Image (cartoon, rainbow, N blue to C red; front, side, top):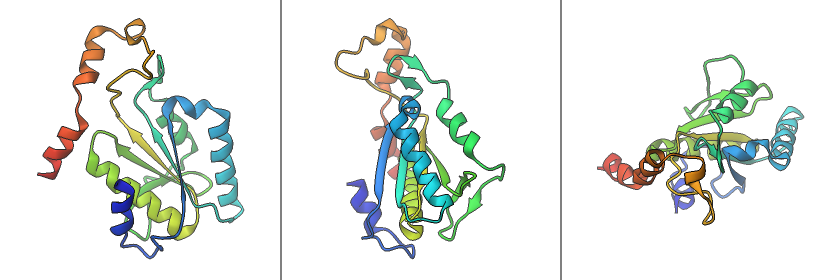
Length: 178
């Protein structure tokens, strides 16, 4: 699995067996009170210099079930970010930092190597510093409806549905690896 590979390839000062929490949500769930409470609590823990080793992974496919999110996840986390061009951490990773010191990594969700790299950087950071981090997986393609009962044709045109279904990130990853 990806997690096993990340643990085995961890070259940082962090202990690869040190547990962290990994929370994943979709871009529509950034409005959810459970996520907002958890993220704010992690930010508060960071502010108070308390241990809180958690990585938040936000998948942004541009749709929240049946309505377009129009880049709101990027806007939301950019709003939290400092104005700096990025912070270079000990591990050589680049991420913007929110105003409470939580690094925000952004990965192209259609680029398997970028997803792997940013996930490794975020998990290394959270392990090493026992602190929260966030990964925004951007530009993801939702290949199928939200659920088996989803009626995509009610809110997407046929061309958009066909284009999303034809997207194949696994084939793209094979080309990248070759």
